[in-house]
Amino acid sequence: MSILLRAALEYESLKAADPRLLNQVPGALDRPVRWVHSSEVLDIAPLLSGGELLLSGGQALAGAGEERQAEYVRGLAGRGIAALALETGPALPEVPAVMLDDARAAGLPLIELRRVVPFVAVMQEINSLLVSESVEQLQRGDQASHAMAAELAHGGGLDQLLTVLAERTGASARLVSPSGLTLGAAGSFDDAGNLTSVDVPVRGVLAARLDLHVPDGGDPGMARVAGERSVDILGLALLQRMPPGLKELAGIELMRAINSGSQQWQLQQLGPASGFAVDGDVAAVVIRSAGAGHLRPAVDALLRECVPHSASYANNAELIALASVVGGNSQRQVLVQALQALEVPAGSAMAVGPLGRGIQEASWSLAEARRALELPVPEGVAGNGVVDADTLAVELLAAGSLDPAAREGFVQRQLGVVVEHDRLKKSELMRTLAVWLDTGCNAAQAARELHVERQTLHHRLQRIFELCGGDPRGTGRLAALHVATRLARL
Image 1 (tube, rainbow, N blue to C red):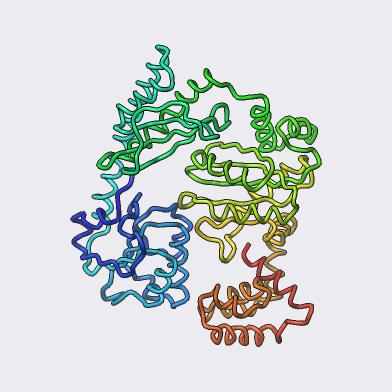
Image 2: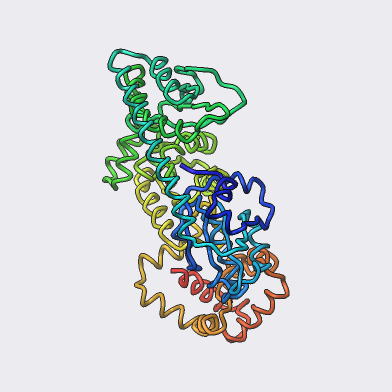
């Protein structure tokens, strides 16, 4: 359940704060608010999952430097929150310009609360409504699925099941095969209203997509909940009509075997049966998302366009896939770029494992992709950015081969003076150095990624060189400093 941001701003508890939208973010007021949360913690972003309206009194921000304020905004934008509402007053007389600029650039709606209100009252009023309506939607969704189960027990076909669903939700419903063939329908579809889709698997294989068209004035949230609740019933009906083939079943068993780390001989047997060459290169994909199951049709379609063969498997909040890569690392990069354009729910995380030489290395590629997701998010990867395990090879090697004390000791020996400078001066020299090195010592590109002027970057680099004993370019120290900046992320 969610409400639009414009509706949240009209609730009495929040309206009393005299809220004002400070930046022009397209569609800002139509963003869905999933929850209202308040916090003065500047490192709150990793604890958010997206869709929150975050309330802050601004006390911590008032004492932070401009770079820290900008980092705070970028972190929240990267988590996909609905909006940030800042209370201005004695502690924070006005919203800092650097926060406005970064919020505008990152597409984060920034709201000024010009009067003091108790945040607990705002959260109680709006969150209680969200909870109660969510419970009601779940109850109505269960009622719809129970009615469909009764219809199936009496011999009803797909059209009859969809008619029951349409009557219960007030939405038109149709079931479409992965190839685009309509398997059953109830009601009519047009351009007006809202369309929501739910994938329907059979024994772990995508068998169909349920489309629900909600007319204007209807309840899209309730329709989606009912659709999700009806997946198992529709799956049973599809199983009676078109059981999955041997190749599909082999694909399911292959992904389960890869996921469980089965022995190589099992993968070499299941691979060819599901369409993978034993000696062909493969790359694993991991997507962690609250909507992992619903992402599967889009991911399967993307894989069909990028690689000659693939298989996928959804389990709880994780979707894993294996891609056959015939073009080596160049085709693997095409896959990474395609995933970066994939629309995923806020708070999702994606990673692509390194190239496995043969089906026997599929489990290793999957394990490396998962390990990459556990590492700190690299600079520039936010929102629906894809973590490329190949770009984190140094971090993965160090995390697996060096104990924390050894890693910390190396960082201290190479860059301890820079770390100490950042601690005492509240500067960002380590981050500056890391970005500069990651861009191949390209000052123009590093300045863009750091959102600073080139002159500012050069001043920072000069200070870093003074602390580190000179410009490392053209010396063997460049590689050591680069490794140290990357180990510092761990």
